[in-house]
Length: 385
Ligand code: KIV
Ligand code: ZN
Image (cartoon, rainbow, N blue to C red; front, side, top):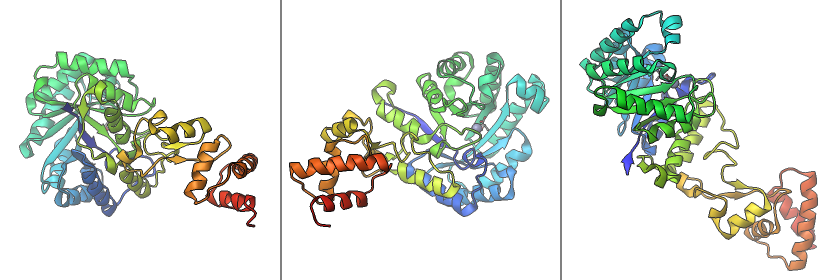
């Protein structure tokens, strides 16, 4: 099995979620949990962005061991020097420098020619290499760039000493077939590409960030840039938990492993949600409240007989103690009886029949049935109240 490296950017791109601002202490807490989770690289921040971001990267670099610590810098000397200042005490530092390569960005944002972008990329990587031998170069808006020019910029970055080349789908515009194809073309057309790790960084504007990342991995990418709970700029980034569990659940298809300790996933998700204030939607894959909850009678009966009838992942693998059977109007007798047994009640067939009929009536009046509702109903049925 080949290894896919997990580059977590919760503390950088994740913090770019509108409304999210983490202080140094909170960033340190998340970084420590990311090490427990087993990520390979922590992108700790963008030091030139603010004194607080600089301080957070410096604190993480100084105190967090067990993962590579990365800082972001635009392709200019000021940003790169500042990134290094923040990173210098890291055990394994990485400078991540980027410049846009799409004509839209060149014309309207950078107001630079292609030649100027090539030169800036070359100089930025060289400058970063003066500080560390681990330099990542990103071609921002790669998926909307002219492919020949993109490959030219990537070749220049390799020649200047970049060790990781990142291909971002900055605006979440790509679709899986096309993005996979782009990675394959880059591998075919970029001189020196076999010397570096290809990384991808997908945004979720069309809800395809994880699918695009998987397509890229199928075509040779070996580093995936992700965030916990998929938080990030606009619609967010590829979600770490979805990508990692996708590779895990479909191991025979992808033949890839990660270094993630999956049993830490749920705890990490909870911590990030609590500290960022970005709550996880109930139906969110892997870590949502409903991801391992079954409501319909047919599904509950199946899961009670054999978990794998309706679950593709054992919840304990991601640190959730067990799946839940939610009692509601779609629930069946099997789940009802099982829950009563868990609450310490063993009813005769006749008692069970009438209690179940009354339970169904209650469900039509009340959306959520709690254990207290069940207790009241059964005690009444057994003539105790
Ligand atoms: O989305 C993007 O292009 C980025 C780069 C800085 C890697 O976040
Ligand atoms: Zn991004």
